Picture (cartoon, rainbow, N blue to C red):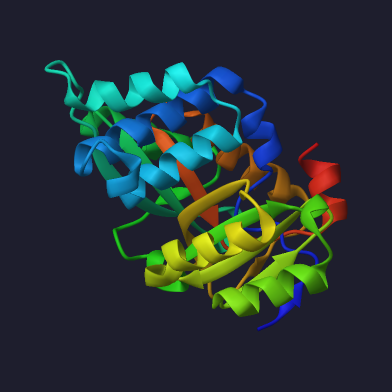
Length: 248
C-alpha cells in the first residue's frame, strides 16, 4: 500500500461542483430514488441506498429531502431513471468516463455528445476508455481527521488497498466487493466519511500541460453541469500550477 500527496485526478475540483447547492441536491436525490427503487426502501436492508443517504447527509442535505427522495421511488408517478455510462476522450488524449442517470436516453446521449464535440473532445464506444480504469470502492475523509500515518494505519487495519492524501482530503481505495466492510470498520475508527462510493480509478495517468488544461477543464465542467450527469472520472495528471493558471 502506498500513499501519495498530490492526487487530484479522480474527482475534479469537487468544491466547484458542490458550490452549486441546488444542482448537487438534485443529483443526490436522484441517486437516492434510484437506489431505493433498485431494492428495499430501507437503508438498513439496501447497501446502495445506505451509501446514497450517507453521502447526502455528508453534504448537509435536509432529512425531509432525503425522505422525499426515498418515498418518490415507490410512487405511482416515479420516473423510470436509466443508468448509462458514456466513454470518450478529451484534449491531450485524456480518457473520460461519464455516468448518467436519466429519464430520457436520447436527450442524455445528444447532450453528452454535444458537450464533448464543443469542448475539444469526442465520444467513444462503450469499452473504449473503461479498460484503462479499475472499478473500486472509494472512501473520502477530510484532512482534519488525522495525519497520513494515522489514516494509513486505519486503512491497513480495515483491509483497504491504497490511500492517497493531499492538503484537503484522504482518499481510501478498496476492492469493489470490500467497500461496505471496509467503510464500516473505518467509520468505527475515524467517524463518518465525507463520501463513500463505487468509483472509476485510472490505472495510469495522462499528463496534460498548458492551454489544453483550460479546454479539458471546460469540458469536464460542462459535463458536470448537465442535469443527467451524476459523475465524471478522468485519467488526467495536471500540476497544481497549471490547474491554477488555466482553470481558475
